[in-house]
Length: 278
Image 1: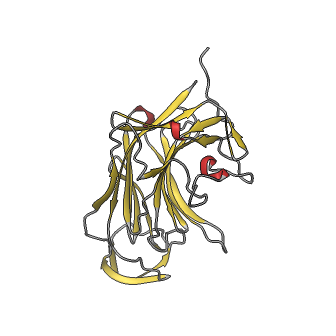
Image 2: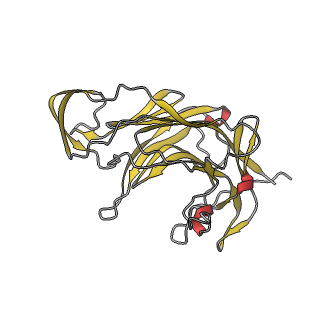
């Protein structure tokens, strides 16, 4: 049986900054970014031999409260209208050894709530919700091959993608944000970051979600930032605002620090194949 594995460590930080400003326009001056240090409130170094079930689900917990994995989407992350993933997430594909969590994709058929897939894989979804501005960080090594590993935070009407990869582009990853609007459609923005082959070693991917900026990092080096406010020239890139400056609100930026949960998963796309030897 062919296997491919995503290995990771995880740390999350939290900064208590109160509610975000929701005005359409911002007029002010001075230094607008927070100066407080991040405070560690949640982490997992995956010690021992079993996943800490007080911290993690191994599925999307969108089913009934008594059986949160009892829905088709819960372990496939897809539905009949958008069948773009080809895995069932199973508990057995999430293992811990030597301080590492492994998410393993296997070339084996599985069926969940009437949907049959060609592969199984692994994921973790935090049980804890983070209800304020936060820093999310993961140290991981991605597998070689045409997979879709990702680390992201989701809650309210917003998603923050710390990294997404796909189709074997091991020197390229995507960062970005999405804000859903039931009336006017979705708003999203982000960027593809070109770098070296990320499957050769462990790397640290992180994001700082603060009131005025969402900043993405690879190995503690900033690679992209998204501002809450826009000028005609684009996102402001400095925390220093000149007197009487006015900015339009950036539509995709989360309106408030919604209650978020973090997810690390190893997805497999439709049309992907794992080749067996012999």
